[in-house]
Length: 275
Ligand code: NDP
Image (cartoon, rainbow, N blue to C red; front, top):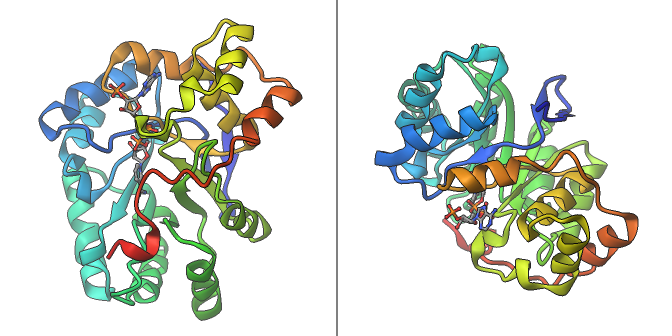
């Protein structure tokens, strides 16, 4: 199965569908990520705060998959913002992952109360120049945070990873990102199981029409919208289900009906409140 790639604004490209490991128990991570790699996922999304970078690294090492076939993302946690702390935190993440470089490093949240994300962003540009990070980006940045980065540094993030699913599509951030060539990564693409997406008639009807599951329909909606996504599952059967999404297509009408489900249905915290 060849997963389509999305071209980033820095010349690199990223597999559009990956596997996320938020809330994957560190003790189980190596096994679960190994299964995801066996299923065919080649793009992994972790973070220092998930506490499972070591397990991700062990699964990568055990897989024998050539490094260049993998796309690995990790993230800087809020209390590591600031120039020196960013450098140290990056070194520590790289070591825990057992890698020589990561494909994508993200500022996890803007953490406006700290007011250090611009400083960290300058350091990210240095890390990219060092070659130990291929692409740099941000997460949970809203338009004012992105505007400030662009005004103060002129370094455009390759991606913005934001909560995004049919009930919470963040149109203002998505439009700003598109205008500036920033790719959108959708976290919580299935609503984290907290928003009842799968029961909505628009989703359920499309699933029935295609003989697919509601989760596959939601993933397909993301793919056709051009989002990068990495649904998480601890179940091998659901890993497979979430990967078998490249042999059917939602119609224009089905896409429009699901896009009309926008409800400002945020399932997690507002970025200005996470510090
Ligand atoms: P998701 O929207 O991917 O939902 C995961 C939940 O859905 C789990 O409870 C999982 O249960 C369930 N699930 C997965 N597949 C299916 C399926 N086919 N049918 C029914 N239920 C299913 O939420 P996440 O928060 O995990 O988001 C994905 C990734 O995004 C994260 O793992 C992380 O990498 C990233 N993320 C980034 C954030 C940020 O601030 N930058 C914040 C949150 C997430 P089960 O495991 O039992 O299958």
